[in-house]
Amino acid sequence: MTRSYEWLTAMNKAHLWHPFTQMKDYNDSDPLIIERGEGVRLYDVQGRAYYDGFSSVWLNVHGHNVPELNDAIRDQLERVAHSTLLGMANVPAIELAERLAAIAPRGLNKVFYSDSGATGVEIAIKMAFQYWHNLGNRGKSTFVTMNQAYHGDTIGAVSVGAIPLYHDVFRPMLFPSHVIPYPNAYRHEGGAAEAMKATLTALRKLLETKADEIAALIVEPIVQGAGGIIVMPPGCLREMASLCRQHGVLLIADEVATGFGRTGAMFACDLEDVSPDLMVIGKGLTGGYLPVAATLATDEVYDAFYADYEEQKTFFHGHSFTGNPLGCAVALASLRLFEERNMLEGVNMKASFVEQKLAALKNRPHVGDIRQKGLMIGIELVRNKASREPYEWAERIGVRASRRARELGLLTRPLGNVIVFIPPLSSTEAELAAMTDILAKSIMDVTEGGFHS
Ligand SMILES: *Cc1c(COP(=O)(O)O)cnc(C)c1O
Image 1 (cartoon, rainbow, N blue to C red):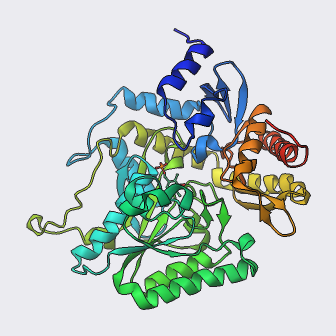
Image 2 (image 1 turned 120 degrees about the vertical axis):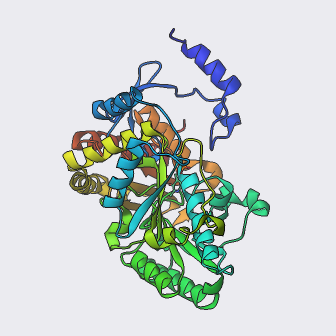
Image 3 (image 1 turned 90 degrees about the vertical axis):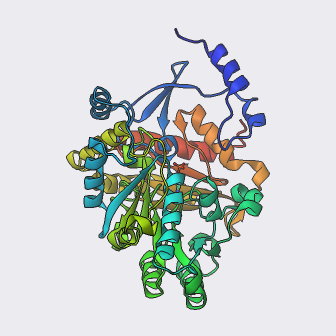
């Protein structure tokens, strides 16, 4: 039975509570209700087409409704939809673990599955904590995170989060973490070099005085996502990794947003030849199809848990759907497409194309900064270009530009005053051209054209 738009709208309003959404605003708007997807486009129940300009919140890799991915799920479904990894295994979970260990940065040999980026981060944090505990070092129990960090919405992940708007309300129920600055070249008086120096100096000072109390540093490598698509100056990540190593502090790379080709390498850590002790992946792992995440660990971390039963060094953690066979099967199919379609090379070529397409936008009076790594792009809008004065939050400039883009046929979701452009890696140059044209027009309409929607 096909439901009418009116019925869906009414029931959506009556029963659905949407994430990261002020429902009072939302309920006054005409909701977008997606019915199907095809390639890089999504279609709503009224038959209108939209480019998926943010990959359905940074997930989608090969487009929607991809025959190879659909088949992988269907084939697995004919065998078994789910069985547990608690003390047993399943075929796709093993095959995927082998593949992930093969493509991950050096040393990450062990794969622990979960079902979202946040749970993957919880696992990394608990593993790091228990790693030191199991080694008999009970003092190393706190974490270092970075200003404006986002690692997911569960309580542990929020404890290492540092976006005041999302996280401050929960502060009383969180464990405290050390916060060092993320190098934000555009917002640092001294530019990239000074921003990087400030980060490294803060980390060095902290580690020199407190390494005894610190279990791990958690970082969004090369690109900080939800904090505004902030790109690290080259060399910064490698220096941070080396400081951690020097001071006996574990490095957790949160590659949930950056993993699987998004930055032009399979993992952002690869861009600087960094091998973290723990790495969290999610989002693009299944091509953006199903909720599978994983925390990868080195043998050294794993070995600290490997002991006689009586010693109680077991990692007592798991989720009902850990290692879900349907999800693992589609992840395997996605990785096969990466090879068959030469995705990484494609991303780098498409990234240069997008960079050229967006170059003219830099001259517009309210475009402050365009940040890009691979196909991860943030465009920061400012009220005053010379002084870099931001728009007031209440002006909702990002929301308005995204709303205009939707009218013109492109979906995206802003981060405050930063317009996000994170297209599926499979987008062709013609599709990227159409998407960037809409993006540019929407930005000009709301910042220059007095456009209100
Ligand atoms: C999205 C994201 C997460 C959280 O992933 P969920 O699957 O939404 O829980 C964690 N870290 C980073 C860097 C992310 O971008």
